Length: 160
Image (cartoon, rainbow, N blue to C red):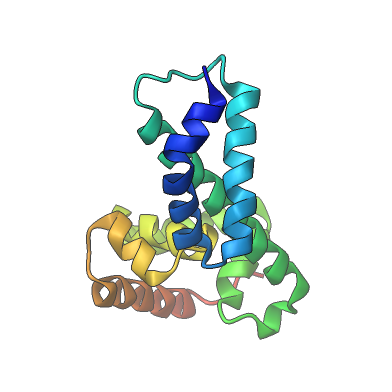
């Protein structure tokens, strides 16, 4: 596997994807380097039959992980009462049994696709636009479903 040729051919595509997801050119450059460093590290285990698809997916996953980690750091640095989705944060850190019970009740009232949207938006840190694109819905449809989910959470009350 010739990493230099792969970088010359697919580097711009990887950079564009990283910039699109991260919204910052410097972070996108770092992420692009990380993707190709990972390719060097794991290259022997990877199938290079469709390198553009592989690199696009690697870039996407790497950037989404960065976004999620950044959101997690932000969430940890904010007092829970001040967080806009403090109830969701509290569920995430509550006792496992208590959380499972609350989430089971919540998702019995909402479909699987709403659960997927909630994970993308609240846990993975995707924007409403990115979430809508992933689930094949309009932004207003995603917003409406997440609003209904938050209303149900308020009805259920906060975990102890």
